[in-house]
Amino acid sequence: MLVLGVTPSFADSKTVHLTSLGWPPYSGKELPNNGPSIEVAKAAFKAMGYELVVDFYPWSRAVALAKDTGSKYAGYFPEYYSDDVAKEFHYSGAMGNGPLGFAQQSAKPISWATLGDIEKLNVGVVQDYVNTTEFDARVADGRIKAKAVTSDSTNLVKLANGRLDLAVVDRNVMDYLKKTDARLKSVADKIEFNSKLLEDKKLYICFKKNTEGKKLQEIFDQGLTKIDAAAIMKNGLGQ
Image 1 (cartoon, rainbow, N blue to C red):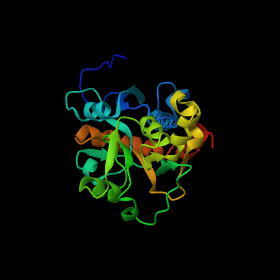
Image 2 (tube, one colour):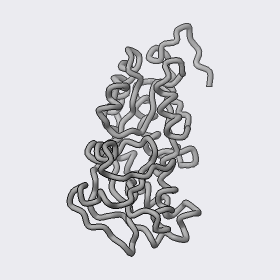
Image 3 (cartoon, one colour):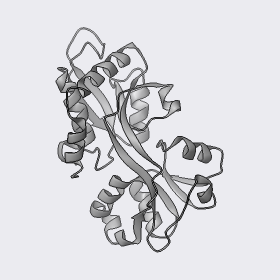
């Protein structure tokens, strides 16, 4: 879509461009209305008189394009909160939440009380995903031996095949992939969600850390107060 106008300012235009990723059931080109996270974002901007256009990319590319000062994108989503990310982007208000924890082998459930208990295990993560502050710190300093891949589905297949002890994943994402991913359908009974959550994570939009990004963040946050984001998210997740 062409954005017409005499100024390049994102906030002065009534069309906002953001990047996202295929992260079903929250977001994805193939999902109804592109998923509930996209629905919430579009509804909040619409409530303020703005049109949101979302383009989907692999996660690392989505973040890089949103960060690129020369791109048309004002930001990316959905994202978890991270102090490091907050140094480079303006965070919106929370637009939803998701239960982050571990998938495990059904035949070999893991009992853990602290993250120190899993330091000797093979743990799968997705490249460039934010997890929790403590978990990511332990991965960064080598205490947790995390193995990174490019998607949740790849991690879950590795887990089902016994190549991982645990995989970090959102429970709703895992449940969706077990039902829809062709590689997982035949081994879905081999994996389950660990009963202990890492964290119930809030979801946000990250806007460029400049004046225009700040304006759009404020516009979006005001729009959030005019809609029932929780109801949209709940309906979109089939809950």
